[in-house]
Every structure is written in C-alpha cells, then in structure tokens.
Amino acid sequence: MRKITIAVDGYSSCGKSTLSSDLAHALNYVYIDTGAMYRAVTLYCMRKNIIRADNFPAEKIVAELPHIKLEFVFSDKSEIYLNGKSVEQEIRSMEVASLVSSVSAVHEVRVQMVNLQREMGKQGGVVMDGRDIGTTVFPHAELKIFMTADENVRIQRRKLEMETKGIKVTEEEVRKNIHQRDIDDTTRKESPLRKADDALVLNNSQLTREQQLAIALQWAKERMSGSK
Image (cartoon, rainbow, N blue to C red; front, side, top):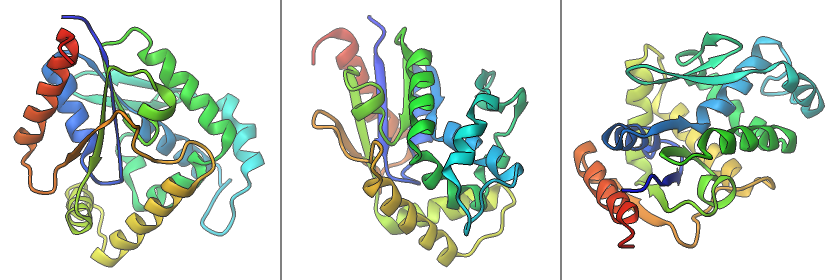
C-alpha cells in the first residue's frame, strides 16, 4: 500500500494526540504533534521572561525565533526537544496552555512552524495533528480527520491528564482555559481552527481508545488502497 499523509485537526482536549500516536504506531508511520511545537516556543519565551498573561510583545517573540531549534526524537514515543533538551513535560503546564494560543497566532511564528511541519511530512508516511493541518499545512492530505467531543468530556480528560502528571488544577480552571482556547483558536487571523471541507468528523465522546483507533484505521486503509 502507498504511504499517505494523515492530518488530524480538532479542538483542545479531544484526544488528537492519543489517536494520532496510536494511528502512527499501528501504521508504522511518523507521528508529529504540532501543538507541542507551539508550546515549546511558548515555553522558550516564558523562560526568557518575554511573555506573561499581562504582557505579550509579539515583536520580541519574532526576534527570538532564530534562536529556537525544535526537533522530535522518536523512541517508544515522540518527544519534542527545544534547543537540544527534552521539554515534553514542561510544555504541558497550565501556564503554557494559557499562553500558547496567543503565541501561535503570531504570523511569523506560524510561518516558521508551518514550513518546518511541511519539511517533516513531505515524504508521506506521517500522522500530524494540530489546528490547521488539513486546511493550511497539508491541504492535499489524503486523509483528514476532524476530532470533536462533548465539552464536559473534554474538561474531564484535560483535568485527568494534568493530575496524572502531578499538576494540581481545579475543574473551573480547566473549563476557563478550554473556553478561552476555543475562542482564540477559532477566531485568530492566522490559520484559524476550522474543519476542512473534505475532512471526516470523529466525535469520540462515547468511544474508547480502541474504538476510535479502529475507525481511523479503516479510513486510513481505504485511502492507502485507493478505494476512497
């Protein structure tokens, strides 16, 4: 079967990374978490004291881009490295989550990240998830999946994820963060979150991890065989 490009887009905490990672593993494809790239840029700027909730100088972020090197290292799972060091855990904090949508809305940041993403996925055999993969990064991807889920399900998933990583957070904090990210992601000028016209919708509110993978695998195999 031919190798294809699979684009997975959707709202925050819909399980995009879980599905994408599982799908890539099942197909022996490369998994690229583009959200982690924007989070890493955000973390870098936080460490440099360039940005905070009440101060967001976009021009200073742009000035730092030449000093930010991102790469994925693949072992049992994909981990993002920022300037040679793994930051997979640090980028998952609530503070990073509260600022990442604003960072990802900066035109120059998106241009650099999209170019890097296209370079990573140009050979096919890749599953890439994010907000604009099927609309901007790979508009001609053979398979586009748009993920969604009930809001309360998303809130509980995010809260559990953070608590599993030792991050204490209240349900209300998670709810506010998800609400704000939805607004930021869907209304930003640069590549807003939207479903591509030819994307297949996967609502996993009531699906198990195994069930959603089975659905996505079927779609992928249809595209790989050329039957769809």
